[in-house]
Image (tube, rainbow over all chains, first blue to last red; front, side):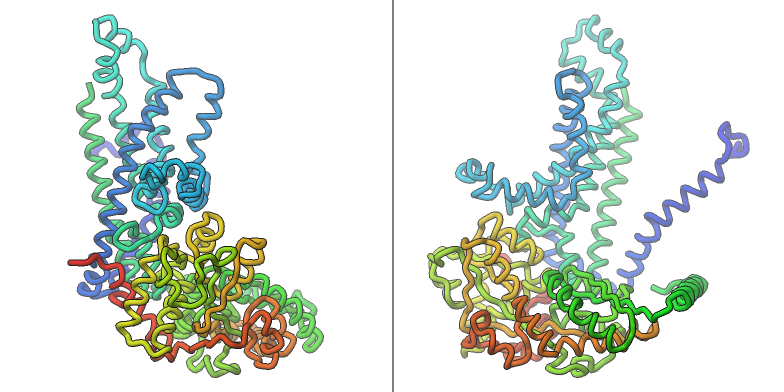
Length: 274
Length: 342
């Protein structure tokens, strides 16, 4: 950092100042407030609030469902991005814009629609429920809506990388005798790893925080389909602000650790490209 | 959290400037009240305001506007605690008004400031069943004894409707002479027949009406009437012989009304008005039980006289005690769902 006054671009201190300011107003101050509120509890009270059997079941469900949904999105998102970049077909523009819809739709609407589709009398439920597939008021339902809300992230992170991909390297691989599958696995996929991991992390984080859609589709049965944010709402209902924020802090800390790990994985994958 | 002194000074100064501006620019005194209420009362208070405002304006020569805010009752209480400048609160439960009072925004002893424990109207929990009531649900025991009955009621932990229904179910056993263990057995069986615990009253209504799940919906009387009316013959209302006396209370928010001139006077007149015969009729029209006995008796077609409504004191010391015992962490409700053998 000795050459700090020799930067090519001007305005470093100004832009850094802005960045810190925005981050503080939008992220750091609210999170600090959250931690401060939780710190009004004694250690014992904190532990009692966040580590009940019921709370553990809820964390397990929240992180598990978000993880599975993000994994599904990894596969589906890559597939979708591939189709959107590599092929032309009528209505492609429409499909492309449909991908962003889950971001714009109030998630509560998504949850309500999913629930009414998959209940026994619903459009899909009338065929699926007799087969034993229950997509409403079950853990499956939670995963389904989380796939829905997380869908855009993988698609939108992978898409630009795929578009920029140099066709020459694929042609080179083909001319050197690799099969189409080998080309995909050894040439294309490695360049996509960082984008895939970013998309996965975004979808995963989105799933952990999701509340609006899940409450409508999960049925909120304690120990079975109750997600952690519901516990926060339950505590607020008792006007127990401290306990409610304590649970929020646990969610924040676990999410933060997971995102740091995912970030590391991403950097590792970038270093090991090709 | 404490805000910095400089910031609060700034806000104060800004408030003063705006206040001065408003008071000098208005030729006639203008008062704008905010009534913070819960979800289904929108129409009720709109109706009430349209009757009260001309009356007050004529009496006092003040231009009065009443704004309304609606949402989940405890969410609304938290908004007031966090700084929503309500002049009056008209919330669904004692617990919500009490929580505001505990933060010092409403003076102690607020319950006795207005007649009838600050309760101009009341309500109760009734059953909504599907057309024909083929499962024969007429009383609380039917909910657990009749075969294959599935019940829709929101989560008592996250919904005011939910816990009032729980208390009603509990009381239906103990007020009739059942023991605590009988009541525990009863509510356990009841909640085992609840397929979906929606987080709020709206969600539960959607589950029951739109998605067609469940045979009976435990609902507040006023909402049940609207639900049945909207279903156009697909649903029926059943008044169980015994149920809870739900106490939606009204209060003037002392900390907010003294901030500006004319607010306290208008707010107090507003709430007093709700006890007049005219206002009591408005409550009845919107399916809330008027506290005035003689007006209630005029509407026995809507509010059957033979329903026994027990007060919260029949099952606990008071509302906070009931909530703590039955719904709070480690309470009876938690034990229902605890997986066995652990």
